[in-house]
Length: 58
Image 1 (cartoon, helix red, strand yellow):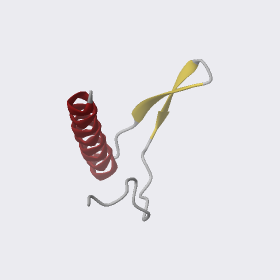
Image 2 (cartoon, rainbow, N blue to C red; image 1 turned 60 degrees about the vertical axis):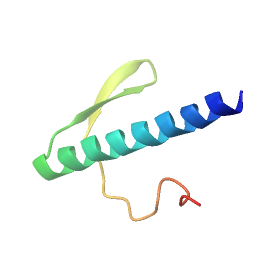
Image 3 (tube, helix red, strand yellow; image 1 turned 45 degrees about the vertical axis):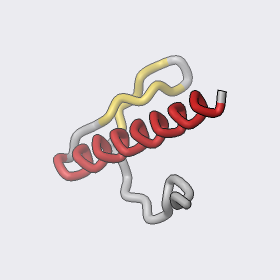
Image 4 (cartoon, rainbow, N blue to C red; image 1 turned 135 degrees about the vertical axis):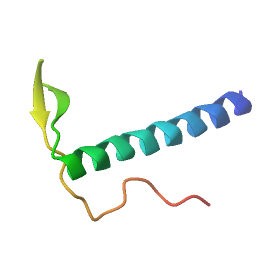
């Protein structure tokens, strides 16, 4: 069970890195990203955030 939790955390970190990379690419090229909100798709240009999304790795 502990091994599965470890792999789940590794996968979550990889997904967060991938999402950050996509958002950065969209910011640079002024692309809109589709976001599911209130039962419909809205397109948004990601904003630059200065606060960290995840806690630092130990």
